[in-house]
Amino acid sequence: MQLVLLPVLAPLRDVRRNEVHSPVLDEFMGGLGVGYSYGPPFGQRLVTWADLQRLELPRRMLRRQAAYNLDARLDAVAVHGQPPALMLNFEGIASSLLLAEGLWASLERCVPGELVVGVPARDVVIVTGSQSPPGLAKVRRAVDRVFFAGDRHLLSRKLLVRRRGIWEPFATSQGRAPEAAYSETVRY
Image 1 (cartoon, rainbow, N blue to C red):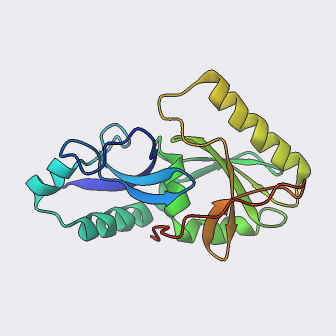
Image 2: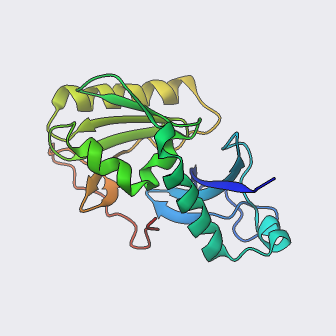
């Protein structure tokens, strides 16, 4: 059986870094990291440091293989809804799509302004445009509902915006300054 790995977003909080049985996580941004999941089904078990040693797989190859596998599976992405907000579905790990460069160029044409997403949980991605007040309100409500309901894999209450090919925290023009994106953002 061939080993299939995909990148998955995971919170960096409460992670014991570099312990043999902790997951391998690379910083992404805004308190989120990129882990690597065996599958299918994906998202149930993340690759640990012990797994890397056992597989004799360099971390760089892990990243490369996971990115390749993600790009190869993009035909499984489903887009639901209509503007002002769209939902993405992808094998229970829709948040992984933030790492799929090719997907976002096509979605940019579907929304007014810059792409803005909510990723409240590993399996939830809501997309709108920065120039759509009803879309932004809908995304914020959806994020709040997911956090209120709870989820095993909660990620972030923050909305993200895509600028110059990079995700960063989104802030409205209501007097709040944008938060700086991590300088060590992992690019896929």
